[in-house]
Image 1 (cartoon, helix red, strand yellow):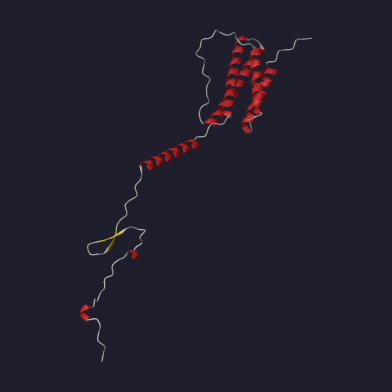
Image 2 (cartoon, one colour):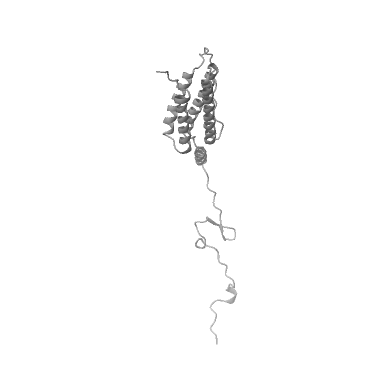
Length: 208
């Protein structure tokens, strides 16, 4: 004989429905609410709002970053550029001075002045090529002055020699500060200028 069932069969629920509770859902993900049937539903979180101040600050930071990157991308030219450009101007001026002096002279000194003019023109070309390599652009050219000046006296052999002496001293000083190919180039120019004014254009010695 079996024991009576304390729970009537008509009161039993064959399938008990379990509703979601707050413990079943991570509360950090989203808030919850109940629908019309009593079920727990996830409510999407409200997207975070971005203030105007934050937008402006981000834009300013990006602008500053872009300016810094542009400044880092363009490097300044080496300091030797200006000094080599000055040597280029000297070489061109010396070549022109020797040419003008040769036009006023007679005799064997004309050949010496012509040789000096050609040599200084070669120096100018070598300096121009080096400046192009350093700057990536054509070497600067000397622009004539727009002011009208009185016609100067024709240059003499002595004027050409004095200009070469000054160029030799300037090149020797610069060569001591440089290194590598540029130092060798300027040193050779200094030596050539020294030989030009001490030998090629030297005043003939008077007989004793």
